[in-house]
Length: 226
Image 1: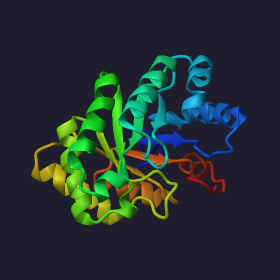
Image 2: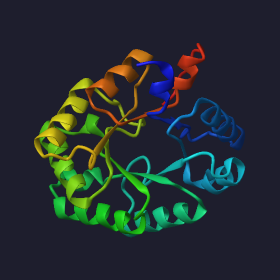
Image 3: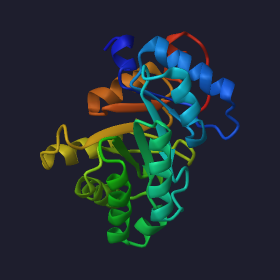
C-alpha cells in the first residue's frame, strides 16, 4: 500500500494536554494538504477548527477522554455540544471501571446514550485494550455491535500501551465470525510508530488509524507523541 492510500485511513491526531491553537491550526493545514480521513482534536477546539477549515476537513473529537470516568449524561451532553460546534466524528471512552465490575448493561446504556445524540455522525468506542483481558475485549465487541456504534477503537494513547497485532486480529475475527463487515469497523490507535505498522494494521483489518506520527513519517521527519 502506498503512502497516499495509508493517509486515507488516518485520523491525524493532536490531543496533548499542552496543545495550543497554533498546534491545532498546523495540524489542520497538514490534514488538508495530505488528504487524511479526519483530524482528531480536543473538544474545546472543534468550533475554532471548523471555522478555520470550513467543510473541507472532517473533524473528529473525543468524549470522556482519556479516563472514561464521567457519567453517561455528561458524555451525551459533551457529544451534543461538540456536534453543535461542528464535529463530524466522536471517539468516546467507555467507563473501564464498569467493565471491570461486569456492569455490562450500564456500558451498553452509556454507548446507546451517546449514539442517540450522535445519530448521523461516526461514533468510535475506545476500550483501552492494554487494560483488558481477551474476554473483556470480546465482550466489548459484542456491546459495541449491540449499541450500533461504527467503530471499536483500541486505545486512547494515554495509557501504558496502544494497538497490537493481537488486538486487531481479535477484533477482525469477531467481525468475520458475526458477519459484521461494513457495519462494525476497527480503529487502531496508540503506538503506531512506523509506516510498516500502519500498513500491517490496515492489512489485518483496521479501517482507521489514530496517529500524530504518520504525516511526519511520510515527510521524513522524526516525531514523538500519540
